[in-house]
Image (cartoon, rainbow over all chains, first blue to last red; front, top):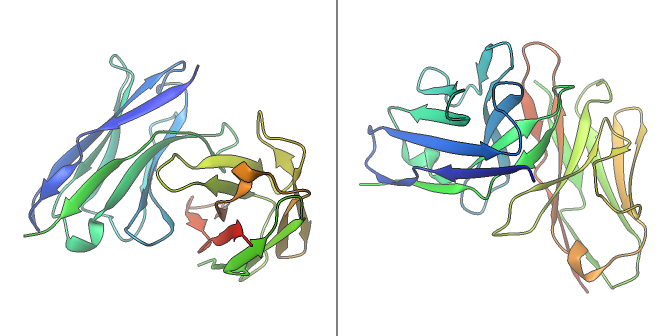
Length: 118
Length: 109
């Protein structure tokens, strides 16, 4: 069974950093495109970052220059390094697998909550 | 920048009724449109990709269609587990940017 489990969320002050992790089972992160999607309280879904199997990465304008997506192939884990955090980054962060066609997210984790507040 | 508009914002229906959800793109798009179901507290679930293709394990009562820049998700007969928020999502070709619509809530009438 394919599964994604996020960890690393928590409370952080504005300007702080946090590193999210997402452990995959049932498939390899190295052979797939992977992404992070978030949902702020009371809001809809928002794409954050994607890493393609060929290592190209892309980020939403709202996080560009502050967030970095990466993967650790040996541990079969996806990461999101979040720096210079802002209150508007408060959200549940989901990791997701991207279809091989590259256009949609077919496997999702349960999410991890990040709260940015003083 | 492509903007997705979903209508209605809320759809109140009874069990067994047909649900028709709309998603309109702000400009001409390809068929790289997907639909998701999201029950609060759970992981989102992919229902439809490439506008028409049901994802693995999705019941046949869910179907997707397209007319120009207008996309439709139809649930032919609502089951109790179908009451949720539904999002459409599009990916631009280059650079790859994934955009979600604001969502349609399907609740029990």
